[in-house]
Image (cartoon, rainbow over all chains, first blue to last red; front, side):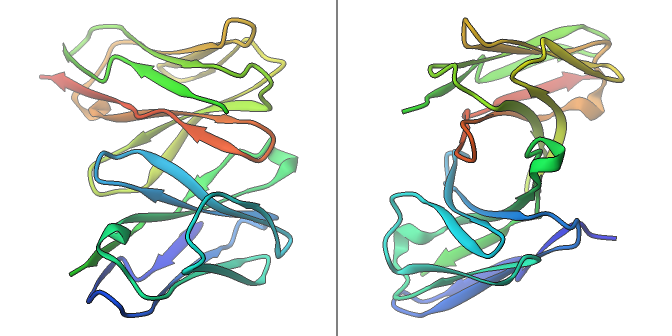
Length: 113
Length: 110
């Protein structure tokens, strides 16, 4: 029974396209996150949502727009994709009642050609 | 701004050895520190979480310590096995802002 799931697992697209990545968690957590892992495997937080409200928005181009329709879902929409957007994107979730211990999804490998 | 450093970047040991992975951070005002492992092409698996008020946590062959005042944490792996081969990441929670180290890539040789 998957705790944090992401779709799609792989995404290959052309420069300039718009794409979305979906994330769902069934852990009853109140906070969800998007991370980007670059080619050097460095993980950097992009966004954090708590109870559907944006609480962290790191220095990310406004081509990236997160959307949280409910506490269990956090989607990431990317407009006008660029070569530098190629990376692995991870979704994670946590709850303050469990000391913000984070649980990660399997990742979405985005390749922009 | 919080900076998290992990040393060494890579480590290769024979099976059965005990080993220590290091994590240091610059801002001691943390909520907790979490250790993860990442297998190639996979997501992150949570290993241990240490709250800022704790000194250590143990799970099986793993023991993580935290010295908040000096900005350091260690992950001790006892009796290493080939299945422990992975990249180990530490992450610091600065009250909902998470900062990751670049990881230590561990290879345990049979």
